[in-house]
Length: 228
Image (cartoon, rainbow, N blue to C red):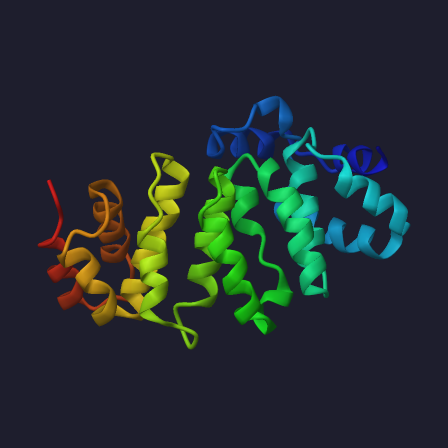
């Protein structure tokens, strides 16, 4: 496919080696070695220049062979201006995401103006059987619902996710660490009452105490709540 050929024209073998070390779930042979800023610019270019039927064929050609193809796919979804179309493409794509990096770089711009509708989709993603669909759901809950749109219900939603998967629990810990930064008094009881599994509990505390956004007295309190 022409898109893949162009991606190989941008490869950087040194960067490929670096990326491979960060993503143990991805076969190194599936990494071309193209830097993220270049992939974003490339996605913008093909969105403008590539015929619609060509783009549609690319997005239907799942699973993609290469990590960079997945990232271009993610960046094309990001640019969609129709909420329902964006969700449909996400639901088709997320089951084929096989790494944390592709999962975490996706942030469709249309979500910001449709948070009520987005919340319904997040609830669906959180009960998925697919690791990175769940991770994406927690990530969107963290990105859009810990500030002005916050409700204590959202902490319950994240806490209700139970998984043995490292990449789910790491995002869950990141969510609660961020919640402790932004909504400390409401989030603290989840730590005080041991409402998270021990690993996620301790990882959330670790991430919180490493943050520059949490005052020292809060960090000291959290350190005392670490579980053995």
